[in-house]
Length: 337
Image (cartoon, rainbow, N blue to C red; front, side, top):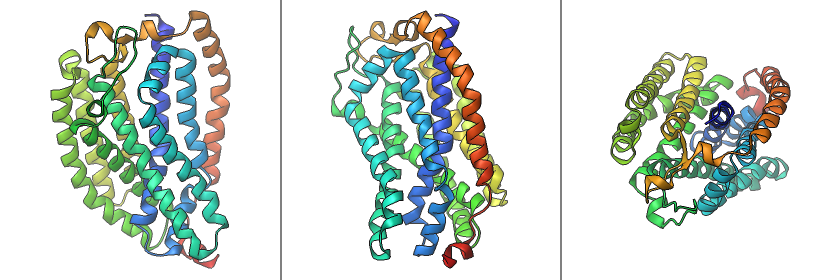
């Protein structure tokens, strides 16, 4: 493997990390619209916290997919064809979630509730399906010598992938609750804090089950014991830190630590995959490796130069957007509209 091949594998993991850190709280906020808010004013207040940023956060997913297509075309082809139905469900969730922001804005009050539900349902579908996809992927899928995937229902849906889907959904929901606590005032802020306090205990149980299944159903501990154990411990410590921050009402720290938990989870998955991009459950000889999945050296060099040129502008724009909309959304301001 060349340095550029490894660098682009790492970059794709960074893009997914950025997606789950930023879009993760979007999903959590979307789920909270129907589960946390108790009236239309609170629902408007919750949605207003992500109104200026949600569409920009989704760009991280598009960039990750585009980077995978350009730098790892064989990975892209096998993954997107093998997970066609799962990715279709993710796309459906993103669509109904995306249109709900605009449609609810133009609907009369008695029709808004439909789009509140589509927002919450779409926000739940996407992280759950991503959890299903990534966890089934690290277990190994029936990948043949030509890297074609011929999977059955049980390859996608099994106890480990379901645990992964639920765990990722819960992580995003808690990340969203922490963001709501950071960005709002009034009763909704206090309620988000109370929900998070309780749900972190549920997450602890989920992390224990996840760690056990990771040991039993993947080769992560067998192949990379130290780094896998270190990242699992880090995820637990970050979760505990976020929970303690919630209890002490240190909302900024709670949000940062819950986001770092999601980043650590992505790091765990990608470090366990390395130097593979897809694992074959048929034979280790059929694993798709980084060195065999990448584009030409010229393509990687060209993409690297373009990325180095444009990335500072993109990060500056994102930072500026969050700076402009940094203030809390006040409960009284929403009611006055």
